[in-house]
Image (cartoon, rainbow, N blue to C red; front, side, top):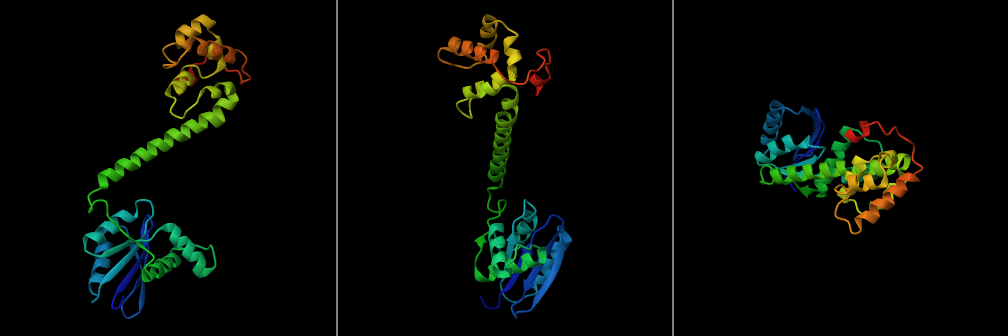
Length: 240
């Protein structure tokens, strides 16, 4: 693209490294902080150029959102440069894994000029910000649930109640975790008689076919568990 100014921005939390290549081929390095006055100065510099201006941004967490929104709102052509693409291109260009912000700005500029970028759609300007934030929230909740489940299955149960894991047949078995919350160790089960345990656990074990047979089997399993013994009078684990 002739008569075009290219702007490569390596995003950071506090300040951004910027490499500008003007239409005459000259380059200028800048460092701007993530604050409005610096954004305005960058806008004034770019508006002083005669031709079109294309901006490449490598996203970093949500730090890229304010400057990208500002530039997009000002009418600039903002391009999305994926981090994995920057890393692979940096390795190819410099034959090195070495990473620093000025070098990344050069790589982003190279990708911008060769067209190896994506169109940046700003969530606020394009009207899907709420949906995106809900999606992120759902993802983080799901991730936390999965981490908790894996911690129980790979760390807690093998130590305290290894035999009980065979009863969990699906990751969504809510009844299993209710049972584990109520009876976290074998001693929490065997402190009851079999009849008392079946009565106490009847409403906790979910809608199971042959529930009585299942609870009898669980009681027998608890009685022969090799798990590390825990004081049955300790209630602290029930409140985790």
